[in-house]
Length: 336
Image (cartoon, rainbow, N blue to C red; front, side, top):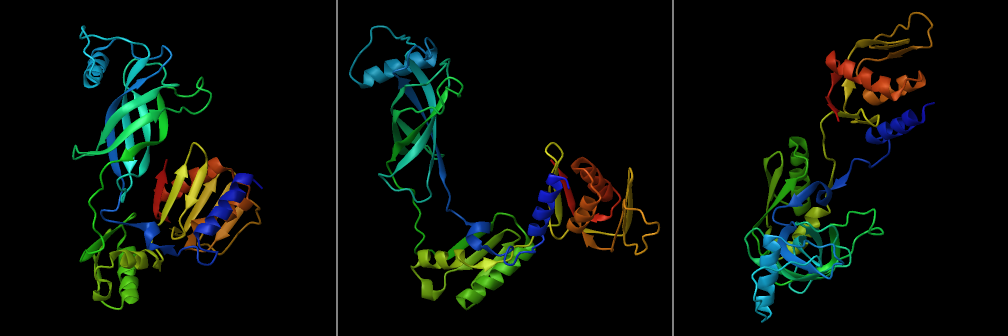
């Protein structure tokens, strides 16, 4: 038996729910709380201490060095400065949703000029700003580059805990009167199941769905000024998320992922020496290359039958595409 198809059948069985409890999911895993997210930070800085792999002479680097020395109390006679031991860089980082002043965060340092390597460099103190152009963190430290520095991408590196948060993001959740959940995969059935389960857990009509991806929750009197406990209770609620009937095919790797709700109507398939009949109880001639399935079978059952006939992954993908084109495959067929 083709090893790929063995693995495929196992995946299909898992998706079809043959193992108990496979479909239950916590709300915290399928939805996010509006306003609880990371915030992107960006900044500009200078890396020094490079071994001749820096920018050399360019306009913005020259101005940056002159401005830096000016702030340090050293006036340069010439407005131009060139050094292969320094490089201009862009800094990026993500500030946690509830990051507080004094907490460290990792940063990424990327060259923007002619520097060939940031290996061994040190970033000088640089501010990091959010989309509101306010400074939320300050970065500084020694740059690390993965690998041996030869085969790796040396114009970009990391500084673990390289920035210190200077101010808190304003987010007062404890006293809110309403919270909003956003489903990662919007679906009307999933949203309806979620509000029913939340209302049952909270003992009243507190949750309502605005659309397929948005659920509003009014803070119950028992949880007034206790938003953390309320959200912890809601996040732990388990529901069975619904999903569209879908088959995802990657032609390059031969990978096929099958949803359990994908069904096949009555259809006859002939592919080379292989024949498959769906919805025809009569096998006809005793041919080992013929598979007979009942109407309405799942794609998983079709795959198992084709697997017994020794079909290749490439042929299987072709057959699925043909069934979809004939209108007999009820579900989306996504080809990557």
